[in-house]
Length: 186
Image (cartoon, rainbow, N blue to C red; front, side, top):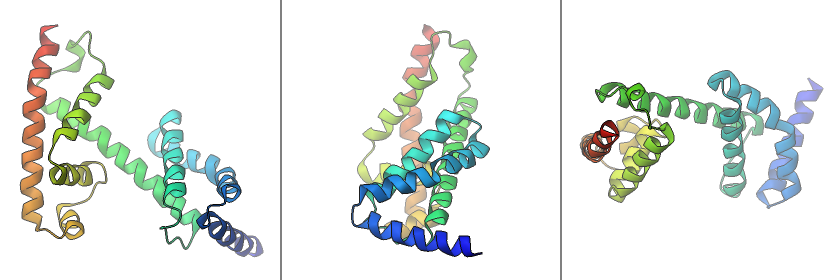
């Protein structure tokens, strides 16, 4: 039990140093938690490179938002952040698979097709959306928020969120249709 209280006080001290912009504190936090967080992410994703990328993203955010974050438990914050990003990644993968399944197109029939190109196309079309609609779409698909949660965060009605999501998805379907036809004709 002494170890846990020592770890907690060490973490609190590290957090204080981190908030003040101390790079050594950040590196110490990284060394202390990186490996175990990658292992934790790996249990969700079964992909070492993706797990490492997710954990690195959590650390980048920790550094970038260090002055704004109100963290009570460093380990808890890091574990929850990694878990949330893993869940978001799994949802993102599921969305792409669902879209492909519902698109009446079998990607195995696309000999020159690369999934990376498809994802880049989807992301480029998302960037074409009006800013408010794009924000709602990203909050839903990437952050995994429910319509009600998005509505609360943006101070709008859930019906508005639903309508904007419908318009965003319709726009994406229309934009991707010619691209899918082009792939089939190759």
